[in-house]
Image (cartoon, rainbow over all chains, first blue to last red):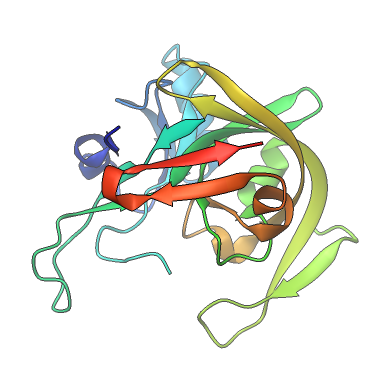
Length: 63
Length: 146
């Protein structure tokens, strides 16, 4: 089993915002300053089952 | 039950000049509070004492913060941090099978200082206490057994 590669989709993500990803996690379907804003944007795009995250800074490792 | 790591983008830094990506044991999960649901991602983190999530997710679940269930914790910085806990349910989503793989009750913390991370942490109390977790970094996957 290989890692799920989200590098391409996350490199295109807006900086310092919450994003909503499609259920299969291959597309950004919404974004906003808060999770609620990102989810609302996704729903307006017809995506009701999106997952939200704030994109971790690519320049920072998580400890 | 096997789950793949997720590969995130990374930027080269002086300490890691060749680094362009980073794999992490991250799960897509549903946080559930009655009829309210939010779908998020959480790092499986054996170094975390409990399970905490960004505070902004609480309002989406109808959880009012602050509440009386406060707890101080510390990370790598000097300042103590405050999390507020509430009983919720969690469902783990399998991207491979496109279905819920397992569910469990969780006394989850919500903390404003997790906001910049944008991911939850699944730590010892509430996650590792319920499941046998085996990390296989070499094969970019991890196994969760009830």
